[in-house]
Amino acid sequence: MTQPSPSIEYLQHPNMYIHREVPGGKRLVILAQSDEGPLYEPVLVYHKDMATSFFGGGDLVRLYEDSSAFQKGLHVYLMRMEDSDYDQAFSVLESFPFDLIFIDEMRFGQNESLMNRFFHLCHVKEEKGSLIHGITTLKEKSYEEISSLFQKIDELTQDFANETREMGKYLSLVVNQMEFHDAGAVYAGMLTVLEPEVSPINKTIPGVSLTYEFSKQEIFSLRSAGVVCFKSTFKRGITCTSSSCAVSTEGSVHKHISNFRIAQYLINEISLGVQQFIGQPSPMFQAMNTEDVVDATCMSYVHLNRIRDYGYSVRVNEPKGYVDLEIEIIPVFSVYSMTTHSRVRVFK
Image 1 (cartoon, rainbow, N blue to C red):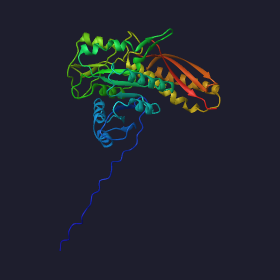
Image 2 (image 1 turned 30 degrees about the vertical axis):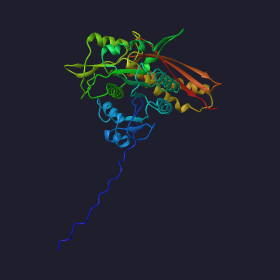
Image 3 (image 1 turned 90 degrees about the vertical axis):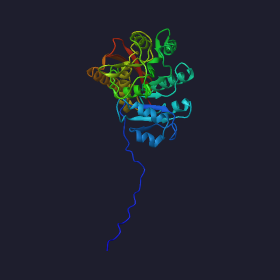
Image 4 (image 1 turned 45 degrees about the horizontal axis):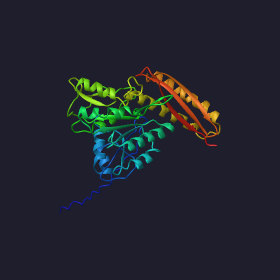
């Protein structure tokens, strides 16, 4: 007699994801709203299914997909926020290690308090030995609308008695030329993938199309003003044709994103190298060992053709308990020097 087949019960277990580390320089945060998921908690994802599993849907998941246009499987930290509550998000990010951040709905030129809050975050991170850079998408589309923002970009550069402060070095403003993708998120993904000494200019972006293009003169004006834009080419397809930070100063070392990225990689690597000296009881001991780390790291960047030359100074503030570094470099894409800072604290 034929026996009935035993019944088989299949159980669906929750997805299991393996924790991964993202190397310094490639830690991108996307800040936007979503349908569900933890609030103000950066979650590392590296696949669309992961993003959907954590956050359901909404802008956050869509922007992750767009950021992966240049390279699939991009490792990104997604951070869900409530409507316009950037203060809470930036407060969390002050202690979270990252390099790049895409900020949805920043609306450059319309929300000065948000811009000031973001620049404050940049200064807090830099004092702790970490350079960060923000990317956002312009809502203005026509050249006439975008050119109305040029004055606002100019105002990001401020002249003081002894120095010129170019706050736009911390920010990329991207024209939203793409038909089915957020161009700013796509550009943020490009910067994450490319090594710092590699320019985004003329790199082919697969799977995207443009809704409109600019003339050569308009592209030149956008580049000069400090705006990122794209063009369609016969041989390469869709490419980035301007990778300027939001800096309008002609000839500025801070204008080219690759210069910033080289400085960013360098200062982050130095900060990581000097962490071993945190808590040492003698500031002078820290200063001597810190000089060795700075010199060795900068020399390695010369050999990697990331910088042409460098110099540095180490200042010890014993009463307040910290060692300050001031590092001056000439990036490979410039003949001008740029200065950045880091700090090592002493616990007595």
